[in-house]
Image 1 (tube, rainbow, N blue to C red):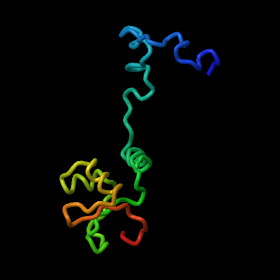
Image 2: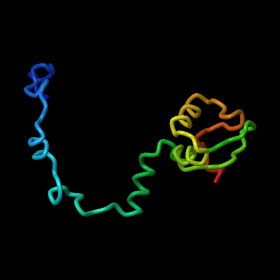
Image 3: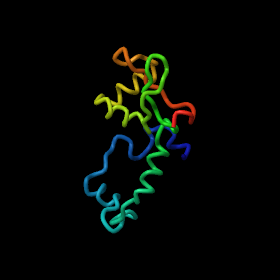
Image 4: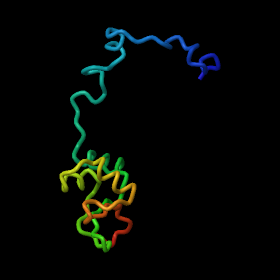
Length: 114
């Protein structure tokens, strides 16, 4: 970045917004967009999903004796299974809380649970 623009107040676009016409010229609609008319294959989608997954080996529902009840690929699937919010699952996982006095949500740490 140029030394002159390190202070954002000096930048020529500071405090300004693009007009809708300018934004339409900047964006790449239709045939100008490289992905126009293309879709990702199912294989590519699954690879992308695994790459963005925080818990590579999955997450599990454990009982109070630390026995695995059910394994999921990610916390969203676990949330859907229990019909609760993924935010709730994350809160209980991050704070090591017991859900409903029955379950503990934890990331799977080894492959022995497969």
